[in-house]
Amino acid sequence: MNAGNFQPVAECGSTTQAEAAGYHRQWLVANDSGQWLNRALCPRLADVSVELRLGYLVLKAPGMLRMDIPLDVIEDDDSVRYSMRVGEQVVDVIDEGELAAAWISNFVQVPCRIMKVHPDTPVAAWPA
Image (tube, rainbow, N blue to C red):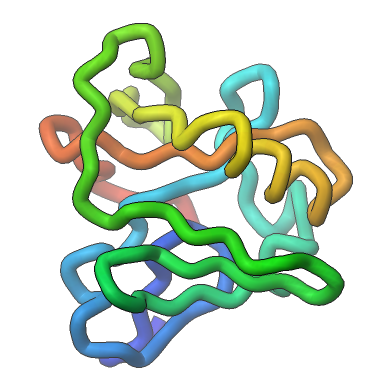
């Protein structure tokens, strides 16, 4: 990843928007087993473009309506908070909900969910 290229959703498209620096890899996609999906497991993630607009993470993909996810909302409902492994690290994640899950699942053709990495447990080192 070049300087100035940021990937708000790990393994999806990147953006050069300066304001995206603080959101680099703040979201990820996980399958129903809680496994982090990368491009090797789910190549269509590369076709999801991302941008930040008016306080939202905006996801777009070919043949899909756009999906807007609020940038700075952390759900305090523990029923949507999970722990999952990313490489060698266990992190807390917040499920972005049914609409986001349906959107990403429909596009990549695999049942999965969009998860936000909880700020208390950032990913220290993403697997290569």
